[in-house]
Structure formats: structure tokens, C-alpha cells
Amino acid sequence: MKLMKSDSGSSDFGWIGQGVEISGQVSFTDRLQVDGKVTGKVISESGVLIVGEAGNVEAQVDVGICVIHGTVNGDMSAKTRIEIHRTGRIHGDITTPALLIEEGGSLNGAVKMTQDESRRAPNFLSEEPKEKHRIKGVV
Image (cartoon, rainbow, N blue to C red; front, side):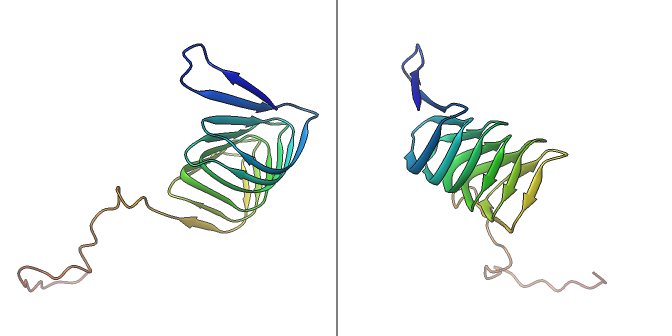
């Protein structure tokens, strides 16, 4: 795995190139691109995982953002969003607040949409009304 540091020194970029196979737990902070094969577990609190067209991930994935151009076999969880591009394939269940699937992309599994607690809209139906109003009509 290559680790590249930008000139500004603000972020790290990891790259698993074609022909490279990693087995085990892979943790990263900022950004990781997989063009090779990863088997096991991929974890990042808020980082971006990019699976390139040649990339093959057979792992449990828990990241901030996941962008799929290749193949993922395993359950995925993303705190912000999951993007499946036209060449992307996911075989497994996903959990995310936002899901984007480009025409041609493939998802074979269950989808659970979550909401970030800080962005969640108030649930007016469960709150006790301050005033009672009677509404007539057909809904």
C-alpha cells in the first residue's frame, strides 16, 4: 500500500494498486483508493473509500463516504453517503443516510437508510400538540 502526503500536508491518500492483495483489517483516516484486492475489514471514522474499476473488496466496510467503481462483496455502512457508479457492483447489505446509483450500477442486497441525529427533522406526529385543531375534509 502506498501512502502519499499532499503538498499542503493536510491530508493523507492511501492507494492499493492493481496486483496488490491485502487480507485483514485496513484502517485509514482521510482517503483510500483500492485498485487491487482487499479481504477482511475496511474502517474509517470519516474517510473516503474509493473502489476503482479494477478494485475488488471482499470485506465488511464502515467508512464516512464510499465511492464504488469496482466490486464490493460484503456489508457496507457509510456515515455520509454511498455512490455506486455505472461500473460499480455491490453484493451485500448497505446502511447509509444517502445513496446514489448511476444508471448501470448494481446493488444486490438490502438498503437501510439512516439519518444523522444532528440533521434529523423534528417528528411533529409524535410531539404533543400545543393546541387541538379539528380538521374536516377528505385526505
